[in-house]
Amino acid sequence: MMILSLVACSTPIKPIEVSTKPVDKPTLILPAADELNMREVKWVVINEANVEEVITDFKKRGKPFAVYALTGDGYGNLGLNFSDIRALVQQQQAIIAAYDGYYKAAEEKLDNAVTID
Image (cartoon, rainbow, N blue to C red):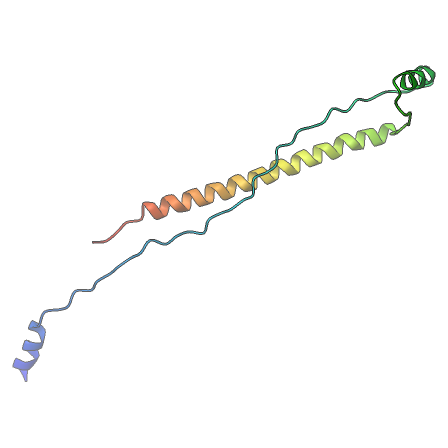
């Protein structure tokens, strides 16, 4: 019995084979953002002193005359709204940069992974 158990220990052990395949990470596909080209906006300030002059000028140039008015508070709110939009765009840019950094770091870690021969 002892000889049989010693013989069993002397048989060669089959080596374990490990095979790995590279794992493709998901690709972040973002649509290209449109470039913002602002159109010229001309502001005409009309007050009691120049209302007739402005109307005459518009008639001479053949332009229709209409008045769009903002209160002082409304004009201030318009500026604050643009500030809010700018802040939101900056936040979105930071999120996109975070995604970009994440995927680049993940790719680098996968590329630098230790392989066992």
